Image 1: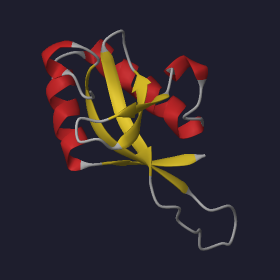
Image 2 (image 1 turned 180 degrees about the vertical axis):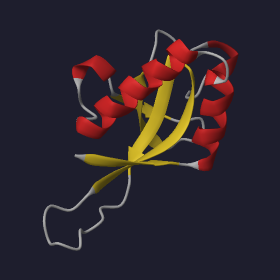
Image 3 (image 1 turned 90 degrees about the horizontal axis):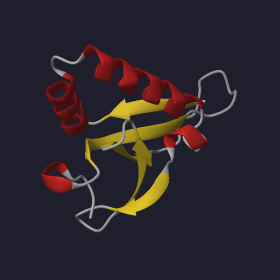
Image 4 (image 1 turned 90 degrees about the vertical axis):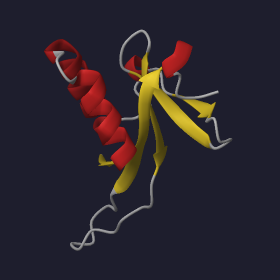
Length: 104
């Protein structure tokens, strides 16, 4: 199990993209649930990408053109000494191609 850590840029762009589209909001909810359960789920088509700034990140599919850009965050220990929590930092959201492209 993973915990999601949406960064401010991600939150801002997600609100803008899904502003008046309830169906798209639902697709994002499903994608987030899959990421929490298993970021390597084949439905997400997660793969390594190189960002515009040259960083090695991951991209997961939401719709045909929309992608979530993320990376593994810092592992956090639980207080009850069970399994540590793996963090996924949600970095960016945007298009796969065109002017709203989120990676190079």
